[in-house]
Each structure stands twice: as structure tokens, then as C-alpha cells.
Image 1: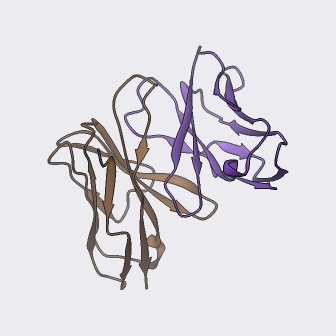
Image 2 (image 1 turned 90 degrees about the horizontal axis):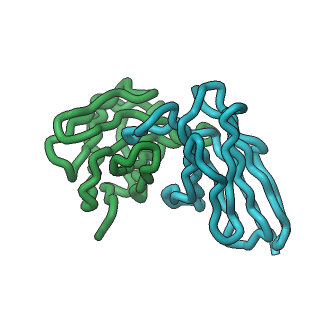
Amino acid sequence: NAGVTQTPKFQVLKTGQSMTLQCAQDMNHEYMSWYRQDPGMGLRLIHYSVGAGITDQGEVPNGYNVSRSTTEDFPLRLLSAAPSQTSVYFCASSYGLAGGETQYFGPGTRLLVL
Amino acid sequence: QQPVQSPQAVILREGEDAVINCSSSKALYSVHWYRQKHGEAPVFLMILLKGGEQKGHEKISASFNEKKQQSSLYLTASQLSYSGTYFCGTNPGGTSYGKLTFGQGTILTVHP
């Protein structure tokens, strides 16, 4: 199993550009999430999904869109990049086991918005 | 609301012990602990469930005080490999559905 994979590893954008961060998992997990990590802030939830076709907002959703058409894939779209979106983005997946589920994180995408 | 971790940073010599605390203002169902090495993804350590027992493996263990909404991570006889940033992730009820609220992290440095 490859686990959780993310592409690209690094990306530089100009303000106003759009892009999609890819995330895929091969563990047949129901739940997938996107977090951003900024220095001193820990991990903050952007969006999450409890299954194909079902998504919801997390703590910091503004400026981001998600969709989940398959169990495996959960892309994150930046609509119009801003310097405040410079961050490291982690995708995670887990399966349902009330309270006992483990989140598996991808390697991350480092994004710089100029 | 984000749980609060303390201390923010700790420096140890190999073989010394450390305790990292995680406190929440909300009632919690579970607390999840992760360790992150520099430039890498967070890696799962353990989960503490409401009503559950203290957990641990080898020299890393944790407890969960439901009344205080506080969890503590215990690292004994620290090794160089323990260095990294430790995060607690909290879940207020039942299945988390993949949405944890993380603390700001505690940086642990172990020197020879």
C-alpha cells in the first residue's frame, strides 16, 4: 500500500492564480481531511469528507474548495491564491471506529504564494 | 476551540523524562497524540478514549483525565529519536469523522 499520497510536493504561485492540490489514498478509508500547518499554529482543518459525494467545512475553509467523487481521491482547490495561503498542506485519511480511528497523513505539499 | 499544550518547548538529555500536557475547554471524547519530525508528516502515537485506561507502549505512555479535560503524554528514559514536535488532537464526541482540533504543538529536543 502506498498509503496517502499528495502531489505536488512543492509549488510556487503568484497572487490570483488557481491550482489544485491532489490527495489519494489506497486504504479504502471513509474519512478524508485537509489541514494546513503554519508556524506556531499547529494543524488547522480546512475541509473534510465522510464519504464520496459528502464534504463539509472545517475551521478555515475560506478560499478553498473540495469535492470527493471517489473514495480514493480528495483534491483541494485554491480558487485565487493569496499570500496568506502560503503554508504546508497535509491530507489525511481514516476509517470509522467510534473514537478509535487513526488518521494517516500524507507527506504534505509546501505552497508559496508570491 | 484549540486545545492548549504545555510546555511549548522542552530540552532533554538522553535518558531524562518529560511530560507534555494538553488541556481543552470543551468536554472531550478522545485525545489523539502525534509526533512530527522536521519536514515530515505527523505520525500517530496513540489514542485515549473517554472511560478508557491509560495507554502506552515501551517508554511512551499517556493518560486522560475526563473531569479536567486534560491529557498528558509521558516520555521516559528519552532517546535521540524522540526529538520532534508533539501534537494532541481532540475530538468532542464519538466518531471524529476525520476532523480533529489540534494543539499548537510542543517541541521536544533530546541531546546526547
